Amino acid sequence: MAEFEPKIVAFVCNWCTYAGADLTGTSRIKYASNVRILRFPCTGRIDYMLLLKAFDEGADGIIVSGCHPNDCHYTSGNFHARRRWIMFRSLCDFTGIDTRRIKFSWVSAAEGAKWADIVNTTVASIRELGPYTEYKIVANNPVKEVSHG
Amino acid sequence: MDDLRKRAKELLETSAVKVVIGYEQGTANKTRALFVEKAEDADCLIFDSRCVQNLATYVTKREVKDKGKMAITATLPVMRSIIQLASEFQVNDNNLLVLGITPESKLVEFKNLSEVETFVHQYQIEIDAKNKEMLDKIAKMTQAERWKFWIDELSPCFKCYACRAACPMCYCHRCTVDFNQPQWIPVPSHELGNLEWHIMRAIHLTGRCIDCDACYNACPLAIPINLLTKRMLEDVKINFGSYQPSIKADHLMSTYKPDDKENFIQ
Ligand code: SF4
Ligand code: SF4
Image (cartoon, rainbow over all chains, first blue to last red; front, top):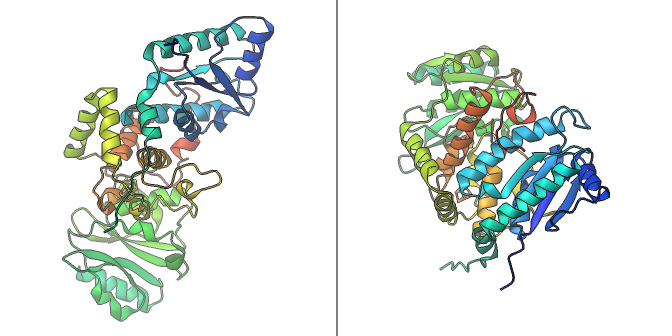
């Protein structure tokens, strides 16, 4: 069997992490190609439902990343996001979602090397954890027939 | 509760309010909500330990609100709900009068909502021992056990939304769960959709839920969905300090502090 290749979805903000990831590329830093990057205007726009949908669609791991505190293009989007992440992560943990599979980070437009590192370490840790089978089983369960009689 | 009936009668006779929301005897030894619009009907009002439904859920409903000024029979959880609703601009002194019932079953009438707030703040929101034990038990499980626990507990949910209807804080005209463009949450009763629905519900109530258990009491299948909101309530306390609904406060999830603490962002 071929080695398991984790599917990682990255939700990043336009102004910092996306630009940072761009810098990783233009600096010709090589990093794992398992990541699909989705660009958002701001971390404040990264709805927790989107993260659930990523798992739903078969992601094995998720990266959520944006501007460092005080660097938000819209002043406070990342502060708001941080509060929601705190609560969302705790709820995920309580409901038994594997929070080791969701990585949160701050990566600025100047941190091309940090981005490569975040992706590489995430891919390595997800590779170790294996595919997110638990979630996939539930997501792929057929809808049960209900008899009304 | 003769004084409640008497006061309701007076309020309606003098047209100080147009409707009094309270409880009446229902079927099968249960009580149900009553909307008194005529003074002579006020005699049907009752209050006893069976009256646990959270009546605050009605004050945001068009059919009730449109009648004119409302008076509401309010136990402590109902008063808390009203303060939360006031902070969300859903009720105010012009459209609501509170006939409070203290935990000692005494009637107190409040001149305005800020008096209600002062009263409510005398009491902390405390999770009862039985539920606390359950929360601890779940917290001690491994991640895989928790996953199984919730998938099993939530799988019978058939999305009747009784929990949503019973909750005073679920007053949106269009709920995310009803959206189909895009369809955030699959419609059929299915483990994944059920999990998503309840995660969504708990998140939307984070920092707003006042722990009245109306959702759990309304669920025909007795699914312990209130444990999710209780967990969130505890976490709000841990992360952002104590939690008390306050009229002037910003909603906890739409504000921030630059020094909010977390330990998981790299
Ligand atoms: S979520 Fe449940 S416990 Fe919380 S306010 Fe709504 S009905 Fe009450
Ligand atoms: S009341 Fe119970 S069965 Fe109905 S939607 Fe809520 S949790 Fe599901």
